[in-house]
Image (cartoon, rainbow, N blue to C red; front, side):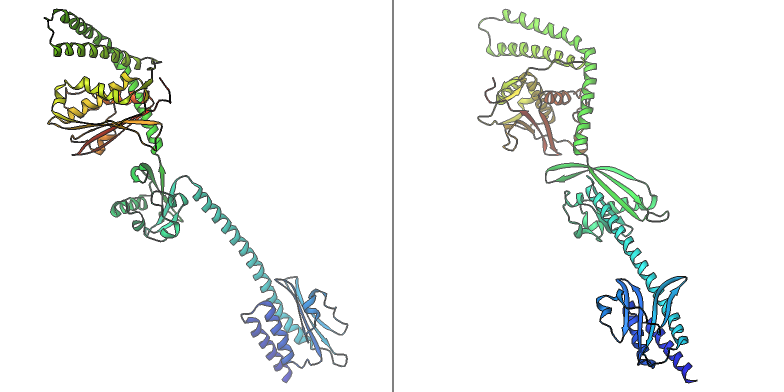
Amino acid sequence: MEEPRDGLRVVGAVARELNRDLSPEDALGAVVKLLRETLDLASTTIWLRAPGAAGLVAIADPPDARTADAPERLPAAPPRALRMPLGRAGHALGALDLVPAAAAGPPDSLLAEILANLLAPFLDAQLLSEDLANELAGQTRELQQQQRLTTLIIDSLPVGLYVVDRDYRIVVWNRKRETGTQGLRREQVLNRPVFEVLSRQPAQQLQAELDQILLTGEVDQRETEVEGPGGKRVFRMTKVPMRLGGDAVTHVITIGEDITERRAARERIMQSEKLAAIGQLAAGVMHEINNPLATITACAAAIEPRLAEPVDPTVKEYLEIIDTEVQRCSRIVDQLLDFSRSKPERSVRVAQDLNGVVEQTLFLLKHHARFKRLSLERDLAERLPPVLIDGERVLQAFMAIMINAADAMERGGTFRMRTGFDPERPSEVFAEFADSGPGIPAIELHKIFEPFYTTKPPGRGTGLGLTICYGIVEEQQGRMTVDSVPGQGTTFRIWLPRAAEGAA
């Protein structure tokens, strides 16, 4: 009765070794050692052959040098050896060889069979684990590759993008965001509350926008202006709901697209369309103005010979101004009529002194009652490079700006004129006109160049002056900017192209 108990003890010990947290090679080695220690196998060599992660695992006891050098070349079992195949579900997994010494009796086949039955499931489980581990490693590599590709795509987008979860924490922050107006690195913002990172927008307002997306699942899009190092930029902010599973919104994707140039182009197109509409309107009424202009010219010509000698210089100057202004009005009428033609006549641009155009504009306006109550300040740059313009057209634009400024300062004020050039813009020269009037609210500032838009009381203005001025500046291949602070005044700056060296 001792032998069965010894066999059961060995079987139990082997089972315990196989259940330990060991590698397959270490577990099999422990089994071989256990068999040697617990059974009377002093004259028996034990071979345990099984496939492993690195190929064939061959464990011999007593040790054989060939197991380390070339385990796959282990000698075949001699005729007296007891070989118990290790297999499961028809698949060969290895073999357990008990090789007795020449003088020893045959090994216990029942015990060997029991041990083989214990080892087979273990080896099968190890091979399955290796297969699963390899498959998992492959899937992990594929997921990592997909994640890298997704990150690269997000970082390559020409828009700023970030994602927040339901706790308002940032979980994605793309490369465009890193190089944006705030320039925050990804590691500085991930897992932080969005309100700590985006401080330009009030936290309550931003949270309300995010809550609206999380609650309704609807896309929200709006435009906003941001003051950056290079000036004011316009962004289109789009918030998109994201669902990781189910119907509930789990994240909010925010996309910021810089549309400054696009908006400017759109406004230029709209302005051109409005100018074309003015031309169509002008075509119907401008020819009616020619008749009173002709009458004024005839009357001025008839007055001069009737003046008693000596002629008052002031009266003579007034007559000259009347004649000059009537001729200019006639030219303005012709130019307005050009708007209604399919191919307007282009103005003739020649090199001219910008300071001279400013002075000529002042001369024509000095007799207006509105300018007599103003304090005029000049700061005209010396040795100013000539500009390539149609002087008559630019004078018309300057007059529109000056008259508007005088109207804005009904109770008096200071009107400053300045010319110069910016070393960073060597191809342009500017003329600046600043008043100390009430200023223009920011919400109204973008409308001032629209046709028929005016802040003056009814009957005081048509709303065409700045529209025509804008068109004239564009026609001269220049550009115009305006800044205004309510309560402090408004400044117009007109940039005009510099004439080439030696231009006449």
